[in-house]
Length: 343
Image 1 (cartoon, rainbow, N blue to C red):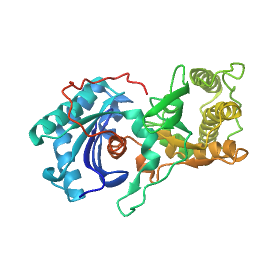
Image 2: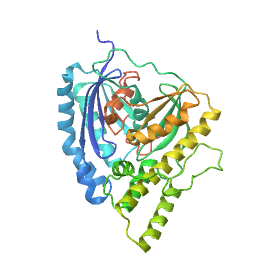
Image 3: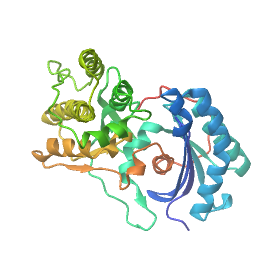
């Protein structure tokens, strides 16, 4: 008898078509078909294009995930699918496919919150591992991505409380938009990270947002506006040199991460936790990890991150892992896409 159920998970929340097979917190396969090249011409994700690409990719991606895991449909115990948040047209493709497969194979289908997937990605393990990670609770989840930036208290798996979140742009969105101002292409976040390695993070002093506000909420729109005005002022005088571009990238990245670090420090002064979990696309950035570890050092707290940077980006393995903590019961309730779903 299997100790943990075998789950086929699907995620089409944005521009990656993803399917994975998981067993507990072990990842047996994790397949992602990226659409980045398709969306470069638009400078961002175009929902209709994403939907069409998902339709084309979803079948082969699911088949490949099963083959890579060495699993047949008959061996599966359940299916899981991202219900939201995300782009409505994109979510629709994954949900429709999962419902069809659930009916075809007579398997329970679990709707999963994409943000819970990012939270629990830190518990993921390669298939070679047999002992599950034993996290310390209470934990504080820090989700930093292109669509979300929030602090989440993890009381237990499945029981969450959002303590603070962005009031406007997400951190990743802010970096992408500033990268666009610098003509760095799409997606600009990873380019900013690379350019920042060659720049001086103190070359341009950005204001630290919301220092007078006691809440743990964040705001990145002011940094974006400051960056735009600064760039316009520089460009009226001269074109940015390569080194100036490096310095600009290093400075804005430093400012964005310092804002997160500052709010995290404020939170830790008032909330007792056992460890911190970092998830989301921007969690792959080594400078963010260093910045948070600096904040945690005086509290002697561990920063838990996904074992692979691939698990920071959108993927279906994290959806399967989240599903593994849910009861596997069939539901007659219709699964609807929820683009603005919250934890």
